Image (cartoon, rainbow, N blue to C red):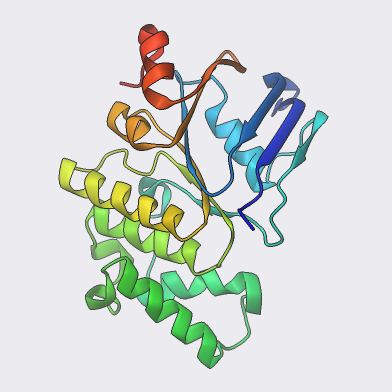
Length: 228
């Protein structure tokens, strides 16, 4: 069976009584990469928070159709620079969704952690502290942590922001491999190149959809709103 679509229907949501999304409806195709684009304040991060389940809409409904909680990857710059944990420990935290924070990892847990260390090409960094890594390496570690949750829905907030071109390419390729494995991927981005690599694009403006569909069509139709 193909991965289920995600349905957001007539959702209004925001922060501290201020609405950011206004009666917002969208269908996110399952098993594909969807890029959320638009200017700052347009509602991209709010939509990610709703899909992740960390923001509750004041009205409307969200149907995810995935049996496991979504995996949410924050920006690498959001991780405290002095966090004293290794790359392996960082990835192992992804298993907390299954084991809890204080239970010992099982053999399967350790196998999953090693698998995603290998797949993200960071196994050689496993014993390095997270705060000693480059931005691209740290982002790959956070992506491996999310994948270790084995969720069917991966959400990323500006995954290539602040990275050099080589690291951006590595993260984009990793996202594509994840999608090829049947995972639904939704990421907010200001990168024109990242948006063009997606299968589907949703352009937000002032908490509403300005355009959606094929990335080239969406970005061409709304040139003033293309990502920087």
